[in-house]
Length: 114
Length: 113
Image (cartoon, rainbow over all chains, first blue to last red; front, side, top):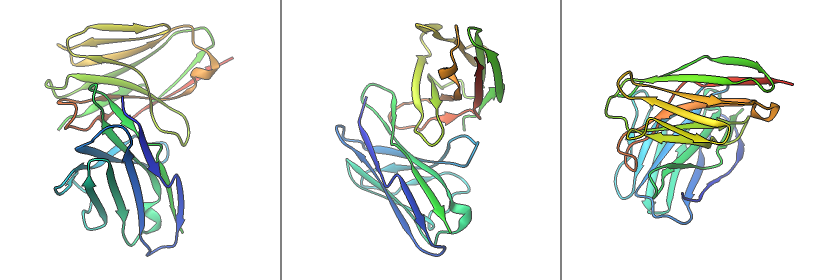
C-alpha cells in the first residue's frame, strides 16, 4: 500500500475565511490523488481528481472556484475551501491509488465553519 | 459513470450470527471491489477486496463474493462480535490508479451482545 498523511485533522474557521487541507503521500509518488467529502451519516462522495502538474478534474456539482486543488508535486495535493460557509462543514478525506492496485486514505479533516 | 447501490442501510444481528451486505454496480468495466469499515470520525479501513477475475475471497470470518454477470457483490461476516459494529461501505472502480472509487451508501451494522 501507501502511507498517506493528511493535515489538519480538525479545523474550525469563521464564515467567509479560507481553509487549506494538505494530503501527502509519504512513500509513494502519486500522480493522482482523490478528494472526497462525507457529510454526517452519509457516504463518501468524490469531489475531484487531482493530477500532478495539471488541472484537477471536478465532479459535477462541485464548484472549482470554491474548492481549489493544487497538486504541485508527486507527494503533495492541497484542497483549499475558499470563502467557507456553514454548509461546507464536513469531513474531507483524500485518497491515493497505491502501487499494488488499491487505495489508501488520509486520516481525514473535520471542518467546522461557524 | 458508475453507480453503486448498497443494502440494507441498517442491520442488527445477535453476537455469533452472520451478517450479509449486498451491493450492485452499474458499470460492467469495473474490476475492483473493496469493502471498508468506518468508525465514527475515522478513515475507511479496508477489510477485504476482490478483483473481477475472482469469484470469491475469504479472510478468516470475512468473505466477499462477486457475480460479474449479475453485477453484484456481497460481504459475509460470520460469528459476528460486538467490535464488528460499525458502518460498512462497498465500492467499485475500474482502471485503479487513475480512477476513483465509487462508494455505496453504507450499512450500519449493530452486533448485539
